[in-house]
Length: 316
Length: 253
Image 1 (cartoon, each protein chain N blue to C red):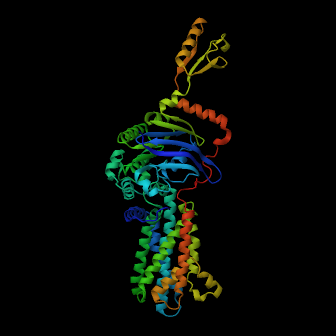
Image 2: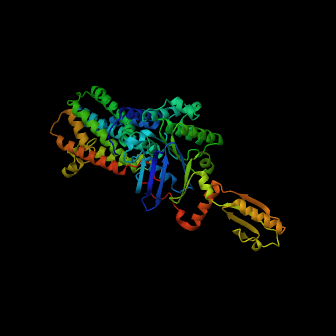
Image 3: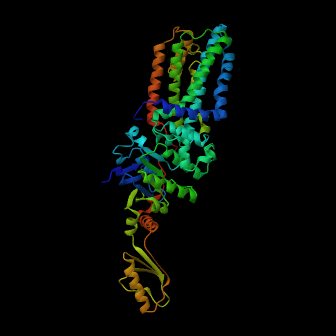
């Protein structure tokens, strides 16, 4: 039996000026799960997360966190959630410790400042002013604030953007620890590697719509594998076996297949029979990145100029 | 703004960090501490020549009280709200447990306390130096000052929504400053104005507060206290409504 913690149903968010950033998004997140929202810049990730965090009311559909409306029932929902916005929001003239102490004053059951700074690896910088922190250190501070009240649900909007590889690995380890302790995590990222590493389930947003969701394995399983090679001069692509759904660009050939092993066997058998050398032969299963690029590509050609001005209009 | 309760612990935490920021901002400290003093001297010299020395002293102190309110509360708070909004601090705070009113009130706390402190100094030290009697109705004076602080905090929140950067706050705070200084009887006594103008000036945002402050200092006299209280109440109610409707919690993008 799974216990649903976050529920989005046909979520819509329009901005003044008529731009609709979120267009009917539905998904749910179970307790203890790490759920990743993926998408290109302007896909509607942050607009969606802000609705889940209860910073704004949706213009259509509904959000439930712990079964409550996070916008209208703010006082009940907030003590149980931790939030890391895409960009910090700290007064630049306060020190790291002062910032954590201030945040502790508005958080019930806050951990001691020293403990949480230790947790995110910022203990050595505790007396430094926020304006002197690097981008990665600011993300760590932001994470510290999000973790301060030991939240049941954690919203992380691009948590590792601006971090160096070490910071990113530290953050991943921390998020995994939190999951082990039963915390539910919803994160957005445009690093596909991050989603592949962390997420139990993920969803891809494109132009405000959910185009794909499932576990990383499910998502890649639905995408075709790919075989690529170049035929030698004198052997036209038309001579390839018809069973292979091959697309030729001159001598360069690309085959997309749901059954990589069988099609590859067929191809190699044919090549041996006619003595053709397949130059630069490359066969691979789909990765998350390929799935992602393919979707972005398909929608770009289908969607036309809609990708423009995603930041136009003012949030309401 | 769904729940309008005020949690003292959260207010204190927000007020404390805001106080730290105020103290670290030299320009703001100078403006808040020195300007009212300076204005009291300007007021005093511009008012001299009127009737007795005591009347001048009293006008100086009530005018000084108005000055402190407008300079320390209004000008400071507009900058503070704009700075916190532009740094995304307000947006970040709204993801936490503090409600909207607590965030706005907590941010206003240090400026309000500073204004109260300066007015107390004015009342005690100023009265001694200028040979003026202590306020005759201190309760009314305190109530008027507190009402003024609440109204100005609201007006500052509203003004901050029309202010894009901290630098332009000097410009956007000017209208209320001028309206108060010229129209609410700080430099120019209302009864020296032509009747229709004086009646109109009574309706300015701070006029009611200033009438109550003067009455608290010198005793009721013939002032229309009920009218002044009603003007203040009307401005406060409308301001609260407008802040709920139009306050900007995050920068325009």
